[in-house]
Amino acid sequence: MKPQTIYIDINCDVGEGIGNEADLMPLISSCNIACGGHAGSIETILQVAHLAKENRVKVGAHPSYLDKENFGRVSLNISPDILIKDLRTQMESFTSALDKVGIQMHHIKAHGALYNDIAKDIELAKIFLRAISRYKEHIFLYVPYKSAIELEALKQNFNIKYEAFADRNYNNDLSLLSRQLPNAVIEQPEQLCAHLLTMVQDRVVKAEDGSTVEIKADTFCIHGDTPSALQILMYLTKELPQHNIFIKRE
Image (cartoon, rainbow, N blue to C red):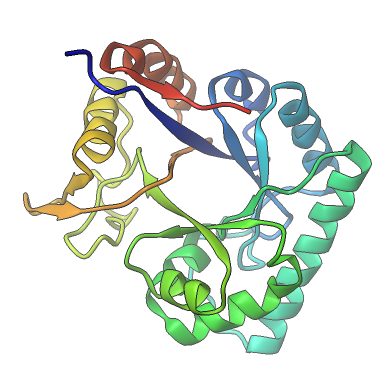
């Protein structure tokens, strides 16, 4: 019997100064554009949004802590009011750029340390949701499975899509392995494909300690700043159909 055809969404973080978006866009189905917090500017948002439009890629905002020095990958202890102001400023820049390009925002996905912090801190998750509340009716929120932001977003009736990371290794509590560790990022296409297939086909992820943990995902991330991102995506485009899995585009 022929295996069931599966369609998946592959998202990629872009607009972060790498400059590889023109190569990546034909190989992905949604993207998360840096909004000026950890990287990016109005100019880069416009440039990447145009590329997304040309390639029929769904477009999302990728807000973060306001911290370009650390690329948004360090947790900041700042007041709720300042964080909300910073996030709303980023979102206003992003939506203004999309209006100029003539496309709709599909989703919002927090970046880096902010993403990890709202996954485990319910109070911070509430602050984040307050910051983006004006977009609630019109977007999906990309969230990790069994996280604080998932629980609070569902409670507040946000539309969510579960996200898993194709290029990152996991701990057994579904947190991501620290980037300080040498095996945090999966850079070899074959290894990444095997990691992804386990999540798609079996709905589990093999954690770093060897345990197998249930996971749910509607979209799978490959970081645009991973040096081998293009090689990974080219490999997946060729290999996934061999398993009757296809990247779903608009």
